[in-house]
Image (cartoon, rainbow, N blue to C red; front, top):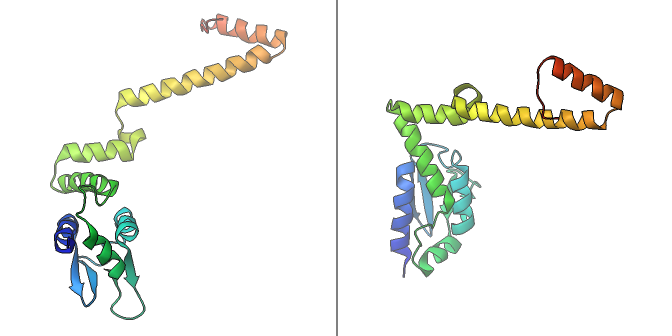
Length: 171
């Protein structure tokens, strides 16, 4: 009852990513515009396997992914909701558009990608300073705990050395 409509919705989501489900006998074969396209989209592959019982035909040539009778039954039962591909859809779309913008020469997309992929080299300096500050505070806290548990003579020696260097640790 809902199969044709659901198949059209599913294909509308898959087509921009170089994938399409087409009739292949009693199955619906997943046609990949680029070989191994689905393999390079592991989250989508997992969603399709889980929700629509996508299977791999690898017994003979040609090898391909398909949705069989079980998946067809799922697609036939009720209209697909807007989130029928789960979180993958949002995440992949965002990454797809960022990559597309980068390839088109849009520098903010490239900058955003580099900031997140390599934060030590390209991250915003204020964020890095904040991270270093928190590491420093944690280090000082650990050292103070060790000093407080130390022999009173060692504790006095360390505190005197810090005072001589004009380092205020609030003790």
